[in-house]
Structure formats: C-alpha cells, structure tokens
Amino acid sequence: MHVEVRGLNKKFGDFQAVRDVEFAIGKGQLIGLLGPSGGGKTSILRMLAGLEKPDSGDILFHGRRVNDLPPQERGIGFVFQNYALFKHMTVADNIAFGLQVKKWPKPKIKERIAELVELTGLAGFEKRFPHQLSGGQRQRVAFARALAPEPQLLLLDEPFAAIDAKIRHELRSWLREMIDRLGITSIFVTHDQDEAIEVADEIMIISKGKVEQKGTPWEIYKNPQTPFVASFIGESTVIEDIASLKGFEAAASWPGTKGLIRPEYIEVGKENEFILLSATEAGRVSHVHFRGSEWLVEVQVGEIKLVTYRSLEKKVLQPGEEVRVLVHRAYLFNDNDNWVMENKLKEDPLPVHI
Amino acid sequence: MKALWITLTFIVFALLLGIPVVRIAGGAWDDGWSGFAAGLSRPEAVHALMMTGLIVVIVTAVNALFGVMLALYLVRAKWLGTQLKRIMNSIVDLPFAVSPVIGGLMIVLLLGPDTALGSLLNKAGVPIVYALPGMVIATLFVTFPLIVREVMPVLQEIGDQQEEAAHLLGAYAWTTFWRVTWPSIRWSVVYGVVLTVARTLGEFGAVLVVSGNIINKTQTATTLVYEDVENFNLTAANAVALVLAACSIGLLLFMEWAKSRKAS
Image 1 (tube, each protein chain N blue to C red):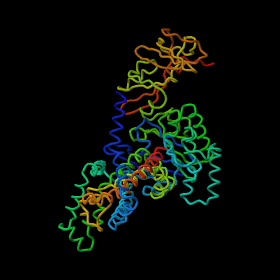
Image 2: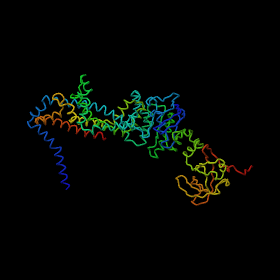
Image 3: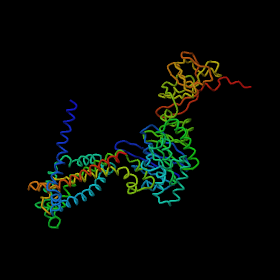
Image 4: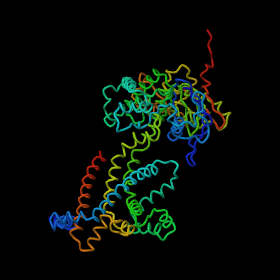
C-alpha cells in the first residue's frame, strides 16, 4: 500500500507531540521510525492506525484520504509493544479473531490459521494460552494475528523492545525475511539504531515531533542533514575547536563552526603504519578498552580527546604511548549550515607521476 | 498469654456472630415445624418475601447494567474530562459515606407526595414514595457503588491495548466488549452482583423511610421482622430472619467461590 502523510500535527494538552510531519512510503517498503523516546514516533504510528485523531493534516492510503475512517475500516495490521494478545484466548483463537469478525467461512479460517502457524513457526502451540508462551513466541503470535486478515499495511510499535538481546537478533532477521516474502508495506518504531539500520529499507529520524531526515541507512549515515541526525546515528565526539586539528584549518573561516567526528573517521597507530605521515597529528593514548572484537582507543590530541577503534590484528597500544592520529573527515555544523569536510592534507602535497 | 488472646477472640467471635445465628435458628423452631411454617405462610410474610425478591431482581439487573457501563466510562472514555471523571469518581462513593436512612430521606424530600415532582407523578399514576418505585430507588442508591468499585480496578489493570487490538482487527465496540473486555471482567461483575444481592436482601434503613412499612403493600422481609419484633411475635420474626440468614450464608459461600474464580 502506498502511504502518504501531509502536514500532520498532534497536541496532547500543551505538548506538541507531532509537528508538520510529511512523508510518502512506496508499496512494499519497510520503514523504520527511529528517534529518542518521547519524540512522537508512536503518536505518528497511532494516527496512521486511526487510534489517535490528528489535529490537522491528511493521511492518504493509495491516494485516498482516510482521516475519517475508523481503525476497523483501515485494513491495518498492528503489533503492539506488549503484544496485547487476548489473554483468555488460545493462540489459534487469537489468530482467528480478525477473521471471525470479518465473517470468513470456517474452513477458510482453519486454513489461514494453519498457514500462519506454519509461517511463524508456532506449529504445536495452537492450543496454548499467551501466558504459557515465551516472549519471542508471543511476539510471533502478535505478528500472526496482525497478518491474518491480510492487511495491506503492517505497523509495529517497538516490536522487539520486550525481548532479550539474543532472541531479538534472531527475530529481527526473521521479521525482515518474512516481510520480504509477503511484500507487505511495513512501518516500525524503534529507539534502537542498530535495529533500524539492520532491518529497514529506509529510516526516518524523528525528534521532538519532527522528521529530521528520511533516507536509506547508508545515506543517513554518510550524509546527515542536521546536527541531530549526525549525533544520533552512530557514535561520535563533538569538537568545539575543529580548526585546531591538522587538515581542518579551513573551518576557521566559518566562525562558530563545530565538528563531529566518528570513531571510524579516525585512524590511530605508530608512525610506520601511515603512508601520509604529514597528514597525521601527534597524540598520546589515554585509555584502551577491549570491546570483544576490537580495541576502543581514547587518544588525546592537544586539547582534544578523540575516540576510535583499532583492529585486534594490529600491535596493541598501551596507555601513555605516543602515537600518530589521522582524521579522515569531520562533519561540520554551525547555526545555519552543515557539511562534511575531508582532511585537506590527505591529497598528497607532492604527487609523484611515473 | 497467647492462649488467653486466642480464647478471647473466639469468645468475641461467638458472642457477635455465632450465638445470634444459633438463637435465630432456635427461635424459629420454638413452636416446632408448625410454628416456623405458620410464621412464614402468613400472607404478610409471603408478600414481604416476594417484595424483597422483586427488589433484589430489579436492583441487581439495573445496577449490573449501569454499574458496568459507568465503570467503563470512568476508566475508558476519552470524551470525559479528567476533572469531571475525578468528581464522578468521588460521587460514586457517596452512598458508602451517607447513612442509608439519610439516603431514604433524600428520596422522600425530593419525590415525596408533598413535592411538586412527587405529586405530579402521583397524579400520573406512578407513586414513588410509599410504593415499590421509591423502594427500588432507595436500594439502588445504597448498592450503586458495589459493582462499579469491583469492576473499575480490573479495567484499569487490563488496560486498553487488547481493545485497541480488537478494533484494528475490525471489531466494533459491541463485539470488542463481549469478546475481549467481558471475559476479563466477568468474575468481578459476578462478585459485585453477589455483594449487591446480599446488601439488597439486608437493606433496612433506606427502605423503611421510603416505604412507610405498609403491611401487605410496601413491607419487605427486613421491615416485617422489625414489625414482628415490635409486636412480640418472636417466633414469626425468627422464622423470617432465618430465611434471610440462610440466603446470606448461601451467598457467602457463592461469594467465596466467585472470589477464587476472579483471582485465577
């Protein structure tokens, strides 16, 4: 289903939960609404579902305005954060509910239940009640129940929030696969950026009720449009005096400009590890932490503290050691503008032509 | 010391609860079976018990319906302001705070034959005070909070997400109530109904004020016992009281069972 939202606003008392939100979602896409808690993601989802009335703005499904359509008529599958399973009904009855309400013939309901139980890997659990299931299984029941009436749009509110980390990982890829197979347009809300990056075709970053940026995870990572997005996605350190770093002196011509540097923009090592030594800064290792698959290295360059990762394959650095630091690029921003600046010194100052 | 306290507790318990019941049971058989049967088969006793039964049926039905509805509105309705909800919520408890006699008096003052509204209704052929409608209203007033107070906490606890899920699956309010909400609150309603029946059976003050205690007309089982005692007709009083006590004990047992179902 093609979904479009125009000028959406919602206030709860004096609190502006959603502010002029606009977006369009193509058929079959899986979209992640990502942002800090209380940023309005769930409100947007609930308005799409018809559980909340927008103060202004239009919601269009297939180009048709659905603002005045009750949730019963919108043809949406919704998975709640806490699943909201009917706790006095068995798994099979939960899945059948939407079909019985829609007056499907009995044999067809039976068929559909069997199909969904198979799809969600719940075979053998049909007669169980929700309290007899694990968190991951409940999640799957909620998913099966939402999918049963063949909705054209699937909305998921923090679908993995209540599941422990290991299962969450499995469920994520399972969900991704399932949605690919069904080709159903889906929107899910999350505050976990790994989840959004891993699962979504496109991410919408939402903060303080506004859409900060919409794009593929890679686009958003590579080219953040606002300082909020830059600092929210990935890890980063904000540097007040970016012009003092080697290769970024040009930043001084924009007064009040700050820099944001991600760990992966930085290389740290001994002198012999760099080809372009002239582009590097002298630094001193202040801390190293083992992070399971790599070292996290904190390094002091003049007044500036930088954080980066270092492969376990390379020589282990010790705190206090003198090292060279290469900053490949920085994300610069001031009150009016933001852009990515590459390290100017990385372009070889003495090119040798052979 | 401990033994002394335990003994004392048992003595108080026996004095307050045990002995009166035994005394009533014994008193009812003072003149043997015939005395008991005679006490109960008097026309006024039959009428009073019928009256009580009728009030129980009407009051329970009305309160069950409106109690559940009010509980739903007070917990779920978004169109009621928070402030208004809070005020309504405290008003629900009013009958708990006010003496039933005063409740009855309010009805007499509002709808009595001397008031404008009362005389108007009287002329239309629907007497309120000193008639069945007034007695029903008085009992409704006294028992109103019982079901609301049983159902509201359960509704709050289950939250509205299951209902929202039902809406999104295409179920409208009626289907959602019967298939999703009702199974969760069912046993609380039953428990509330039992409390209402018990309270209605035993209601005395409010009914006495409103009914005028007219024999064979507006007399209920409790007011009949009161009158029999006044007239030193003790065997008959005991017989009616024993019927009421038996009903109460039956309800008590049923209540325990309902409570265990509610908890599971």
